[in-house]
Figure 1 (cartoon, rainbow, N blue to C red):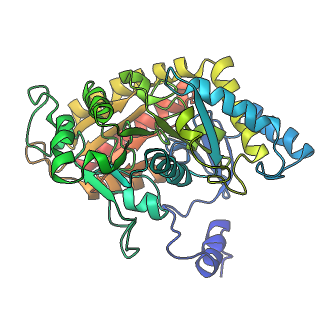
Figure 2: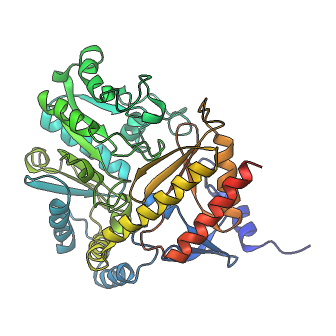
Figure 3: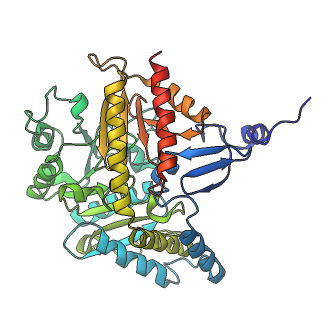
Length: 436
């Protein structure tokens, strides 16, 4: 009998020691990665259009990130910032306060994950406002902790069986133009989905009880749903009129993913509180909450924090990420990449009937697959087949959306033209195969 491959051996061990609920999309075990390429333990090469779910905007194992981590590891790896602080965290906070949209004084705090950033943003909003309620949206994803899961919309697999959920969470429809929850058509709708917040504050929760509205600029896991240009300005104005704080969850959209450092810059909207994670530290566990200084400073000493928050290795990695954006003009590269992707995705829509909608901003783009364009029945099985087809041919892509029928791309912004074209060619072949 032949010996099992490295992947087979790892899968057997994994089945015995890793919890079943902690699932992976493939049985591809990574050995190394560089830029936009990943190599598994069998030596196979994959073009990465997933980026660790929007975590690797500067690419895998960028030399400047690696050097920063190595240098910091040789000095010290942990003291707990709340016990013995250090310069890298302060330097990073200063830079983020400058980068996050908002012409006002800001302050930051660091934790480990996107979900923790959401938790702490809600804590700050409730503390500062002395109000309990949080308004979120259909198709939203904000994490898997109790608060994050409560704010998240999709039940399976994220919420099913894990209730009861956190109280004082109120959910309203989002600006999903392709499947308008109000049965209207843009632009004739006059962005009724934004104005709906006014009646929502009458019929569901009083403004005097509402601490904040939390929203993703582009809904990530929900299907890259991208609102029309005036949506957020109207939403923010309603919040301001009612003394409600506006939280922008930029965990997936931030750090250059949409062609701007933060997606809210596209609409000129300044959130009161912004959450940052994913590509902030190129894979190191680090997230941040950046908000108006008076809000962040309202919380009593030690009311927010965590043992590993602002880990020095992660902060050094994040500082390297910001240096890469500046020295390699990564935002401009992202904009060029986004334009190339949009042209090809528009071609896919023109050529393949299964592509019902193309949406997103910059290089944060998605294809919504449908059974037919008239009925818009979600083609979840087709999306699953496309993901499998691409994987077999050396391309990593991701599906998302309420019905699993949206194909999203989150490749590193440093991807080469050759790698991009090879990946897009595989996608095109896969889409053609769906229609045979």
